[in-house]
Length: 404
Image 1: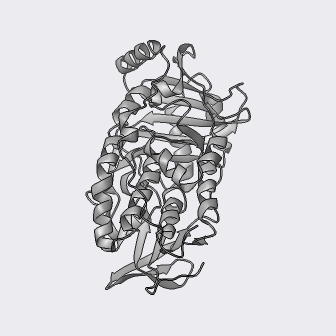
Image 2: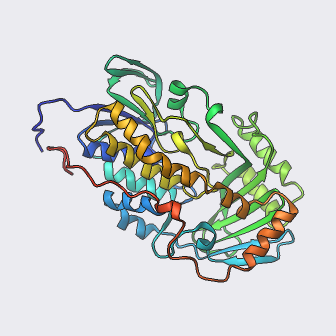
């Protein structure tokens, strides 16, 4: 369609093409922005562990037109079984009784299924630069000058960082991660291994005080293996060293029973091990000048809340909506004003998740197990209030010439 406007389209660079980035690009394009997305990986990343889409985030994907595709990809986890140290069963419950989800309404999909759906919705309408990333950025006057690691430089009206918890854009503009990093006392490793356990659409979790091992079967073939352990301080020396990560996890679980020895053996040979600290990002502000951060880069809630993906989707929508008919300063201010309370409520769910999944003392584990044995009712049809605590604003008119 022909552009009938007389003013040039504002140019925006979005860094990161996982969840928040493509969502942001979709809505900014709808509102008439000229969007470029830069991603350090060679393509959209397929696979990955399952993620949840709940509450307000469901309305975001509905408005994007990808809800039917995600419904088709829904995993439908049916059972969550907790085990004692000796492998005996503590309780088997419906997963939504623990997560606060709504059966038949909320979604659980493989991370790659969501990222591929988001990419398909926007790839024909914005520019993607793969195998590249921001090398430097300089805010001056009425724009941001960006140089790319792959070479070349360009000028944008705004730069929006959506690279995840360890955001490079955030570090360049706001400084090191440490002041914003709220360590929650755990580390974890996740990887895939062969499903030799006869598991299907279920999770089995083994616990001892301060340690947990889980096998998460989305189907009948592979399983996602999780090894989580409490630690007073983050192991900063292991973060840049995959071999050190494997050795640390193996040492923590060296004397563990159940299926853990086989999980450790599989981890040694796995090519998709992801290791990190369980943490949140808490920032006093999400923008500086013409640069803002979104998703985990701005407000990672940790997987203990089950809301990381949903916050990324909602945050991206709210940022784009706030910029639809405002300049960057007013738009960033509206984004914070309208979104922060929702983020704070969902970050506050972290205590519930930690107490349920990873008790750190024998007494806390006993109390957790007693609570689980009493969970016999069907899950609530309402879900946790925090999941739907924000009502999405109505869509402003589509910018002429850019209707999809």
